[in-house]
Image 1 (cartoon, rainbow, N blue to C red):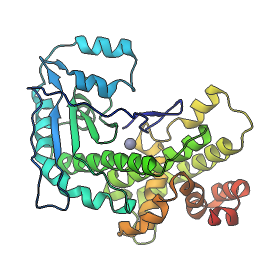
Image 2 (image 1 turned 120 degrees about the vertical axis):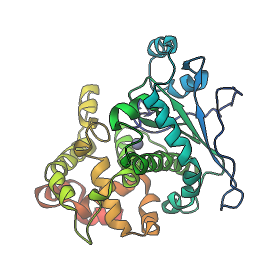
Image 3 (image 1 turned 90 degrees about the vertical axis):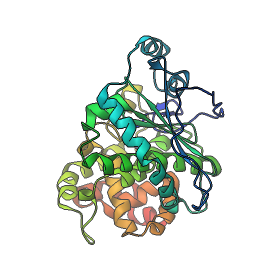
Length: 328
Ligand SMILES: [Zn+2]
């Protein structure tokens, strides 16, 4: 649901260091005012990024790192108003903004002292296929066309909780970016980027996965256990290969990275297991996640060693070493 890049790899990590200059625009509707009574003095502000029934300059900027100039130029030529269904998603999102602002304090708990000391913007665009992503350090983006296509009508009652979870996922990405910035995280190579994407999307997944993926007591839920029969071998095979291969061609890198955090939920070999393992660690208390979040990319090997089972664990530990993994 998110598709930024980092160090040459298409990934969900922000690399933009230019502060967003906000352009005043009549079509941007400010829907939520700062709530001075809450713990933070900042708001979640929703902006509909349409100008003259086309994508606005600001939406185009938010997409710049994600698409080619040619694609963006052609997208800019499309002129149409929101459909009724897209408009319902717009209305649903604006109706949630105040709640999302209150949610921010609980979403930041796993990040310890790290928080975003600023307002949050929710940009809404259309005509795209990626339902949610982030832009720079304080903006969550949703594509109304993609939301409608992927999840159906905004009026379907399940979509209220779903859009809350999608916001939580994307806002958690902003927190991870802030964590990376304040900790001066350096991703020096493909291997570093893969490990970072596993934790970055894993904690995002922890926030967006529905209740059926969460553990039941100390055990995996039925659907998690069934899904991990195939995902654990993939997780183990991919990471051991990625971390030990002497040389990887670009096509190897692309193949090994595939479906880490994209594609069907049940095939997300990096994001889904890590999301569920974090849920196992949290045990309902997000304070328990701090020790993992503060490890950053170094959380992945020990988490894998702790939770993988059977042949997947044997292979994983034969490369990384159980003792060494625990020490990291
Ligand atoms: Zn994501």
